[in-house]
Length: 90
Image 1 (tube, rainbow, N blue to C red):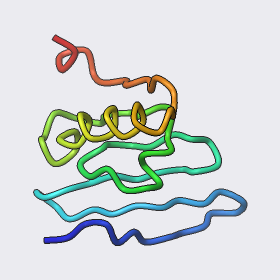
Image 2 (cartoon, helix red, strand yellow; image 1 turned 90 degrees about the vertical axis):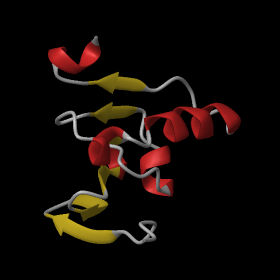
Image 3 (cartoon, rainbow, N blue to C red; image 1 turned 180 degrees about the horizontal axis):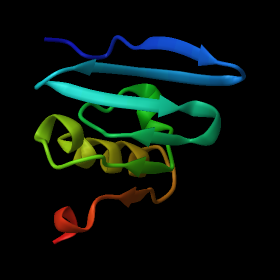
Image 4 (cartoon, rainbow, N blue to C red; image 1 turned 45 degrees about the vertical axis):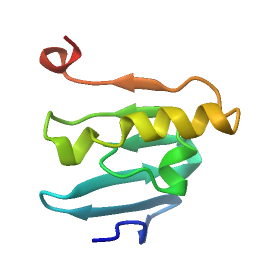
């Protein structure tokens, strides 16, 4: 399955871009804030996010973190911040 297709939604002035296929990959970005929720796939909009908020520990929600970090390093995107529930930080 290919998950680089992102849906776009607007709520007032906030653009929400992402993809979610249960059990495979979830990544939802708010490009204007450079924040995304989950990183199950590292799409271009997710790669531009400085902060990634992990909602829970299923692999389809955080499996692309290495790709996210690597891509940002390659393009001098800066060091990202990853925030996850305390039990996942270990």
